[in-house]
Image (cartoon, rainbow, N blue to C red; front, side, top):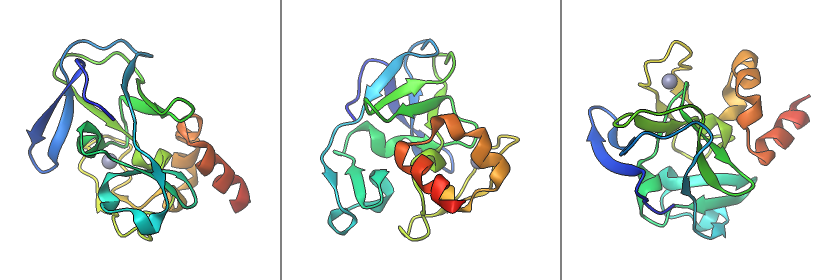
Length: 159
Ligand SMILES: [Zn+2]
């Protein structure tokens, strides 16, 4: 993911770095594109900076803005997995933090060694972020339309 005119990286209390909107962003707009080469897990250098695309296919950050893109259980962005773009889910005001739901891309963060406690503060916060596998069914249903093709496939296998 490359930085663009839409975003700035800032330091946010508790969370560390985050990305904020530098200007008003309309819902549905492309904010950023993810770049990088898909690699297998054994070649991942920083497990905190990857996007899971398949069972053993990860897109590792090229060291620019996406390392700073934080999780929220009630996010304002989602990922278009076909184009690998970060999209605005709704209108976003200048200065608001940009977030997406890590549970829409990562299946098992415990297995990846990078589960964490969420501080998003939203009503729907699931608390410990451990990956899609561990979500309650109600939350899985709520985020269904934003899931990666890989997670949709995994979910089907659960039944
Ligand atoms: Zn949360």
